[in-house]
Image (tube, rainbow, N blue to C red; front, side):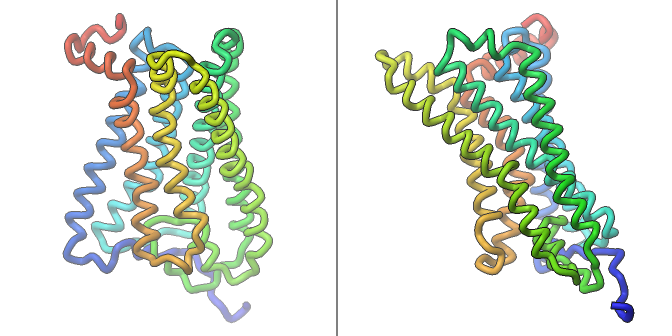
Length: 312
């Protein structure tokens, strides 16, 4: 180890093989990023300014939009630079820092989706107790817990990486600093860190996912028992947007992190990562705008009277 040079910089190759298409890819990513920021910001403004949207479900939705903005901003700007320059160089500290914030926002979003499923469970399965349980103070506590736990669990996975020895190579064939590509560069043993991350991930990803599934099982059983078809449709419409977002989010997440990296190509990994880090945050406000009547009504009123948002 004494004769080896310690790595201080990481080379991210990005999409170095797409020479002729890099300008097209740059334009697509830039447009998607702009739509993501504007769409999620619109959701935040709508919920904050429209009185009839001042309910827990939409309060949690604004937190999801904030998480989507932070998640994609953590990745997209530097990805644009990498695409434009056909690669990039970043210090090891910045690389680990990017991984930390990416993991933090990812974990927080999983917890926020769980909180939203719990909110829908109470609204459909226990409507009489909903207002007494899901009051403003309790909503604030759930949001704070989601953000704090996400930041803390990501810290538990990032700190051990800083203790590893990186002595070369220093090239990552990806467009951001993810967990496996980083650990593949380490010269020291990573078995313990893999075990630690697997344990932490169960609390950040697996347990929340199971809680979402359980919530929707109870929701489905309750909807089936509703006698009228209109009642069933109304109950399902209140959670269809969230269910769609959960399906896309966890479907992509499972595709990326449950399939071993050596069993899929680098191109497939990059495409899935682009979808997860850039496209999915853009889809969330679109899904809620198309499938939620309250959001659609608020958008129609804003289009008709753009200067009365505070009175809607």
